[in-house]
Image 1 (cartoon, rainbow, N blue to C red):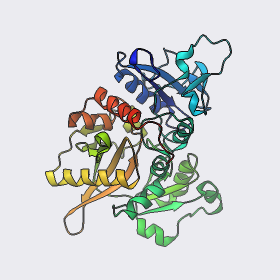
Image 2: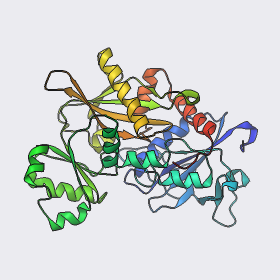
Image 3: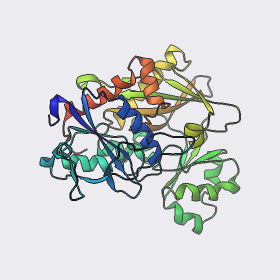
Image 4: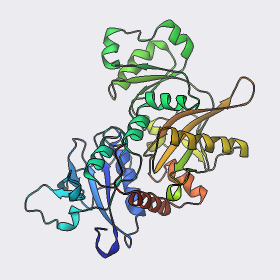
Amino acid sequence: MSSKADKVRVAVVFGGRSAEHAISCVSAGSVIAALDPERYDVVRVGIATDGRWVLADPDQRLAITEGELPEVSGGTAVSLVGDPAGRGLAVLEPGSAIGPALTEVDVVFPVLHGAYGEDGTIQGLLEMAGVPYVGSGVFASAASMDKEFTKKLLEANGLPQGDHVVLRDADGAVCADPKLLDDAARERLGLPVFVKPSRAGSSIGITKVTDWADFPEAVATAAAVDEKVIVEASVPGREIECGVLAGRDGGAPEASVPAEIKLRPGTDWYDFAAKYLDDAVDFDVPADLTPEQTRAVQQQARRAFLALDCRGLARVDFFLGTAPDGSDRLVINEVNTMPGFTPISMFPRMWAATGVTYPELVDRLVATAVREGARAPR
């Protein structure tokens, strides 16, 4: 182990080039606060919106303050060493006072959401550098980030999906064909539909469409985030989430108690403002479910985790409704391989209700990554 005094040196990487930059910063602030300084040396590595890596200043704000979102700024320029023998980070600025302690890290906690972080890109970089890291590998991260391929892999494993249509090169399609969907697709999907960037999160770029006249504008909004757009039929039902952790010592994955998101009156759907800025939702943790419903949610969450070849952790989002025959209808909406770790995020709250405190959760994730070591590319 490279860290002095037998501490584990953890590089917490946050920010990034995606539209979820600010939420990544907030998540990282919570993770850093949970890492016991008696056990861990924490290296704060921020990625600016233009892609620059910096050793973040100690006073870097990592919280939403009076509605103002944080952003990585300042700091000493650093770079990940691609040679596995380097085991970590190198300072780029000449004459820096940063000592050798920065050059090696034991594990990276990439608290990155969205493109260039949660999509397999940084995972591939870390694989090449031979540095252990928290979370899923290259394939699972990429597949789970892309809503189209998440649905394909889950469907191939017999897990239920809502109806949807994929629009490729949607940015160009808006100009070429204002209608975008034929009458048969519109009739099949019905209204409302949710128009989403295929590879984004935190509800960024998503529009709820209740009139087809508004559809082209919604596609353009999504395509500004990702040129591939997915159009999903509305799935009536309760919004249920479940956390999954890799099993201890390589055992079967474990599922948390489920939770439910309840929108308050006047909030139409769970958009970015409702998630992070407005006091617009209530959370039932655990959800008010029957024992049979709880078991079904947990079972499908674990199956989804395995179907996508996830590692470390994931959050699986569901809609729980009623089938035509009166039975429960459980539909998987999305799988997040690096769910939010903010103070209000569901993933740590579900595990706290399951008996795993926030610091214990972070400890477990870091210990799993260290134990697995540098993994083969996935």
